[in-house]
Image (tube, rainbow, N blue to C red):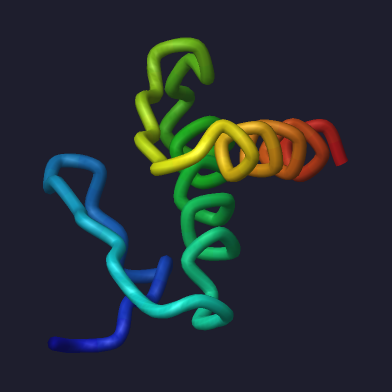
Length: 70
């Protein structure tokens, strides 16, 4: 499996990010959403991200909002 780099992100492809804790999954998801919204002009409300816990979803939502507004 190759390492993901947001510079190589293609919005026309599907991605699965699966890795151990502390490997940068959340960071990469935030970078992807930022690129979709700010480079490809996608509506944040049209982006679906699936996580396994409510806690993870809440943290991800907060961090995405901070990144996009910042």
